[in-house]
Length: 156
Image 1 (cartoon, rainbow, N blue to C red):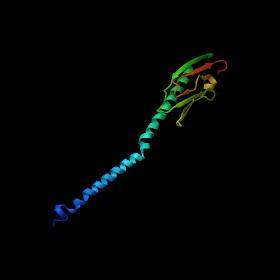
Image 2: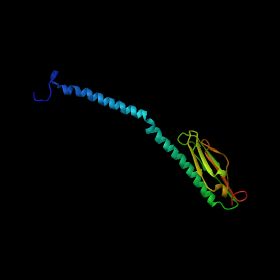
Image 3: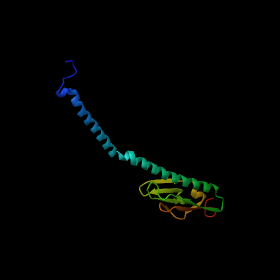
Image 4: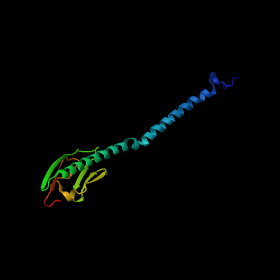
């Protein structure tokens, strides 16, 4: 013998006969574990990035509203008023939402019916103006009217 292993039936060495089924079992089990882990961690691969994108869209909407309000407050002359209309998306990431603006608290609040909440503070809004929203914007409403008044009954 040359030390290569014993020859079994049909001239196939015993090492070659065992390694093919073991390789198949190892490959199949590793593939099964990989597919099972993808299924178990679906939240980490699919749902989590989707939630991050939805929260970012809510954040973008709040930043846009607060920026527009801040610029309107800064440019509003004394004893004057301005009314503007903002077009809002119907839904954000299949989430219905509500926007509440309370001038006395200097905040814009965005609530998703799935539990996402954002607060944007416009410091000094109540001291400078009387702000009112003609209707609270729900996800099904596409436009909201915001009125700002400065002068009598308002801030300075």
